[in-house]
Length: 184
Image (cartoon, rainbow, N blue to C red; front, side, top):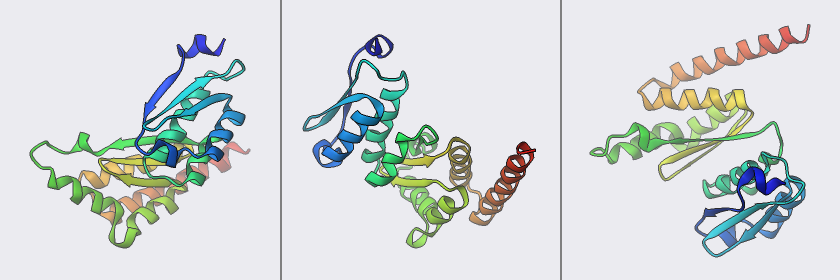
């Protein structure tokens, strides 16, 4: 039945697949998501089991993708929860082809000196962020991931860090007020 939803196995190309997808990760995906994981030298094959949910392969793929993006195993395994979500910002979408040195400047703006900006973004939004190659990966609940994605795009577009921090603080206050209001 599950193969009907997914059209069969999904193969994900992945350098260092055997190092990234350990037996522990494989076992947790198989037990929790009901997706069979076959780790090859340069790829991971995900096959839904009979009793898999329709979104199981998607979540398993997000776990594998997050490992490839440089997230720790603990952070990647947060995606086992229905509450967590992975989003990826492709920095090449914001860089013209003739300005490749622009990529390193954008990554430096997002990471900050000693990782300070990245840590601040993570703390303000309760997310995890990984910057690798031409991508920024974000793990968190949906609203928080959307907020930090918007903040990163603001930084890419030249907004000052202080402006972005103020915007995120205002967003947090509004989110808290909405949550309090929904409890009544």
